[in-house]
Length: 121
Image 1 (tube, rainbow, N blue to C red):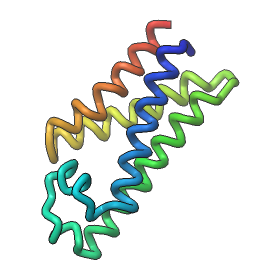
Image 2 (cartoon, helix red, strand yellow; image 1 turned 90 degrees about the vertical axis):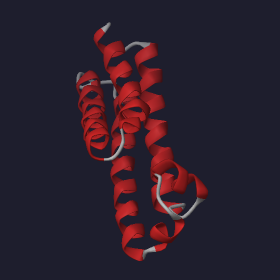
Image 3 (cartoon, one colour; image 1 turned 135 degrees about the vertical axis):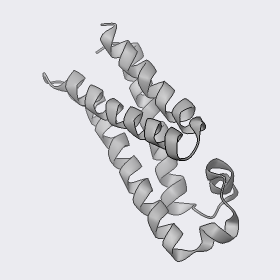
Image 4 (tube, rainbow, N blue to C red; image 1 turned 60 degrees about the horizontal axis):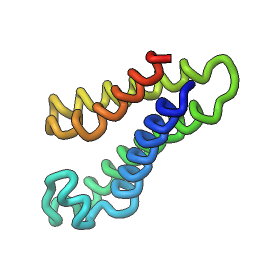
């Protein structure tokens, strides 16, 4: 895998770690309010906190899979990267359809660029 592809994958992974941190540990913060377009009172609801923590955990799984693909040295490195980047793109498309097109721009586009960089090998 090329350096540009690796750097783009790392960027996508770091973005998902950032999302994990917000959703799991700072779900009531101003950053969470602004990022998700939700009111503080709504974010204080314990049920919402649990759902956001669950979403954060899934984002962490995506990030760890992407990081795994960077450090994998075997024959499955590219397949791992393609799988986890495809998961990010699918989630971004679903988020764009159900929540906001910004999700596709912020999460989907970097993952698509990383996929393009992989296929440019």
